Image 1: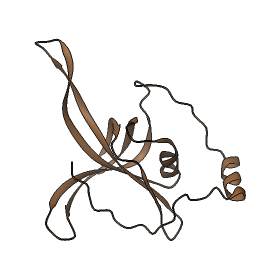
Image 2: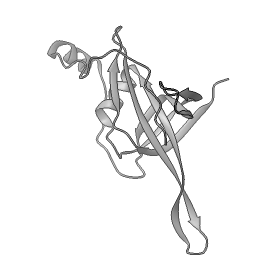
Image 3: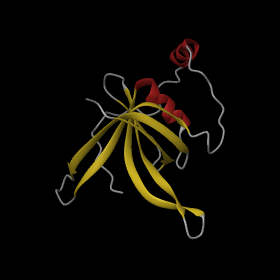
Image 4: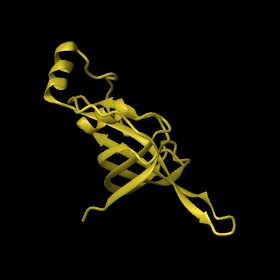
Length: 148
């Protein structure tokens, strides 16, 4: 059984884009989701705990995230969640990372507004004929998890 998760938060690291040897686009960024809690004494909202997620997206969603999201943007992400154990290359650090493999993502419109451009076959043809292809060409390598 797959576990679906929807998380609202802020883009905590600039989206990193790579293209595999087969041409698949992959984007990864960190998402900081901070709870808002009501302080009953002051009757004001305050920041609570922050949960950190590594968000990974593939193909067209990855490309659209890379072109749309910037550091600090308020976003909503839905996808499969996986909890991964990791060890650094020098084995000095160990940890656990919550990863969301995104099915969908977008700006959190409770926090502002955005302009939307629908991706069409015409966009794809224009990119193919005008050479607006991958902005970064590098081989995909499993990144070392970031700590919160």
